[in-house]
Amino acid sequence: MSGPGNVESLLREALSPVEPPADLVSRVTSRLQSISDHAADELESWELAAMRDPRNWLRPAVAVIGGGAAGAGLVLLRLHQRHRRDAEGGSEWTHAGGADGDADAD
Amino acid sequence: MIEPAKTKAQLDEEFAELYRTHMRDLYSYAYYRIGNHHDAEDLVEQTFLQAYRHFERAQRESDGRPLRPWLLRIAHNLAANHYRYRSRRPQTSLEESGPVAAVHSTEDLVSGRDELARVLEGVKRLPDDRREALIMRFALGMDNREIARALGRTDGATKVLIHRAIKQLEGMVALAEAGL
Image 1: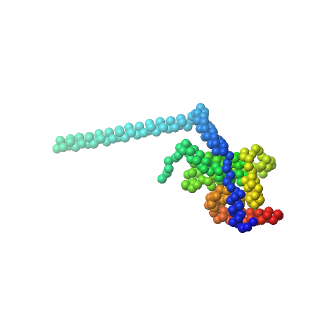
Image 2: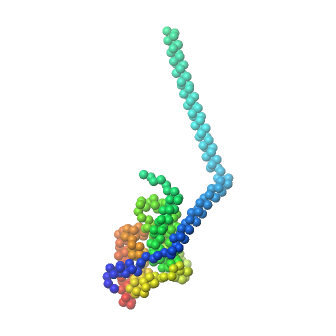
Image 3: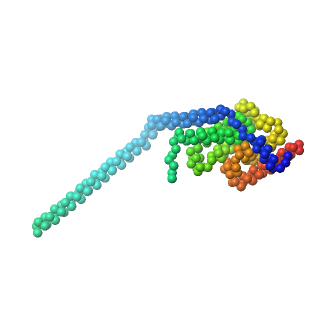
């Protein structure tokens, strides 16, 4: 046997690519499909089961209460702002009325 | 710019394309790495199942680079675990370990040609990392950079690894030819 070039060409020949069995692709495809379907089913049943467990009701309840409180706070804030605006609008009018009154007095 | 997240159907379609493209490479690697068709099929299947779990992240992090080295790295790790597991639990030899899915053996591939048979025998006796580097180079036609990524080494270290593997193989073949 000669030098490294020869070994390399022999290696190329000896390690020729090997064709996989024809059904390997379809087998991998069906395994992946079943894993994917199984994961979807698991997720669905897990969500339903989780909602049946009273220990999991606390978080949604807190979310509803928290959301309700935030909404109520916002409504109160808006009412308060409107009230203040109305009150400020009223004093201007009163002030203007007062000025008119002064003018009349003159 | 951040790309919108892909739908599951899109990801599945892209993954199917990935394994159709690389099935032969993975199978060739597995077959030469492990030495029989039955376990090679198993290794390929496990590699793709594991790749599927991390495909989205691999795509994101690959930054457009080919995913073949990533697949081979998974196969490389699984093959290493396979041997570790078997070394802890003495079992029958690989060729006796079950029904072989295909009929031809490594020896059939070289059809009795002594020189090729000696080369293949030498490849089998190389240390794992050298054998893997030669499989990737000569069976899969990968360049140094791809092999480096698959083996988790630098380009320079990979070049040295392949050079040493060929030198060692030459020595083995020369000894075999001399009948030693």
